[in-house]
Image (tube, rainbow, N blue to C red; front, side, top):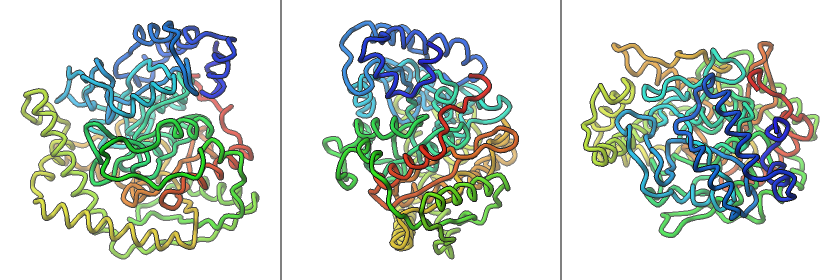
Length: 474
């Protein structure tokens, strides 16, 4: 069963379908590995082992991932009857009364939910650490962060506990943990996947839902299963020409790829991340693509980031209001982490007019990036500006509660733009540094065009397979 857990989700599902293993055997194996490794990783928020075994025994599983264990992040998606805390003490003990639409679609794939996973409080930092649950550790080096905020899911996928890990992304929270844990992470186009029934969009379209996986085909097949609007959604992504799983069999053709070495906010970039970028550019050239160094206009990016901060803090304030009504608790410095408390105050200091001006600023930026990408179907950058961070680097002292948050802004400088624009973007694990740490690179596509990204990802995976690389803990 150790060898089975090393397989991707498509291969695991095929074994179950053929009757070579049972769903219960597969779920039991994942649970046994979770019990062995999670005390070291700190990735699980709520174990659902008994429920998972009951589901696996039911004999009623159907779909492309029938019998395959998966996890759901304890943030941005709810599982009926399970604690839903957003990884905050403000919501400790709160229990979801229904599945979110996304979880309903996960279940329709036949996947078996074995746990919920940890993230940073309300997903504000690119880590999976919180005062509620503690620190989540990187399987490649337990002294380092997983990245985040979907780091709990990423840790379990990288450690071969499960093959499918739900993740969502407001500023890089799919791509950053994928980069830090040696995984494939696709952030889809805005509104490709649902946020309901509680939300139509989140933060005027900043938040996107999908997963972290080890293989490209797992990501493509899962996105095929969960994509599409839900009734009442305020807008939806452009329809796709054919299933993403079919795109993997098609060559990407000759692509003109824009390469950017520096983030638009000018944050410094570690030499290992530049080495990973150059390695990816060289591989793309070898595969017949044209790589051109190019930078989109960034004259007013400081104003764009100010607008992003205002939008994110206003969103946070609204979510804290909802949490307070749900629990009857008053938000306080005792229930919220210092950066969360400070950002909540910032969000409450803005007016409705301020918010709409900020949204307009973000939309103007989106049009400029779309114009830039008219000449390039792919934009290649580092995913993050440094290797996986040591644990605690994003902690903030009491007298400077936003210090870690602004450090996070530098770490996530390459990923935030695609949340503003809504375009799809993926982190691909092509490079490990001399210390054995994974360093992801990011490829962004045009709005609505995950297809080209998936075709390119499949080509890169064939040329430079990564799924056999395992962290020491596995």
